[in-house]
Length: 92
Image 1: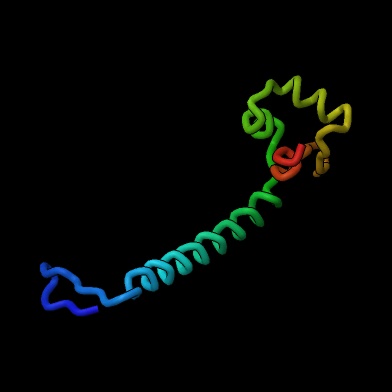
Image 2: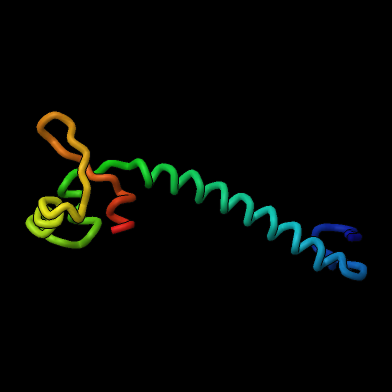
């Protein structure tokens, strides 16, 4: 690539443009995939309250409680409160 000043045109020889675009796309995809892995890991282990879970599923709390009671949605017990894994809601 040859450039004279920032306002001038860029002259590209042969497949240089294609190679440059491919390299940039590979780099961006790698960044995107690594950030998705981090997000997926966090989402998998994120624990929600009943209210948060109902809002996430766009259902009432009583509907959520029915699904919990029937075993459709597994819960984690912490003393007298429960938490629901966000990933269980996504899978279900």
